[in-house]
Image (tube, rainbow, N blue to C red):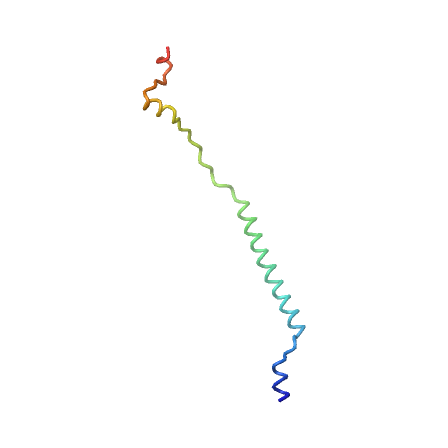
Length: 76
């Protein structure tokens, strides 16, 4: 019966825990390095050309609908 009790209680193997932590740290550092390299590469590219803003004179269209004259000759 003592053999059965000893299998229930497992001790933590410290060298295995340290090795697992080291492997996890290396993998995490590799992932962070990949992300940082990707950000540097993406930031180094030339930005996409921005579209030129268009100006729409909505006053001219609404004035014509309401019957107002917008030309200088109409005010003279």
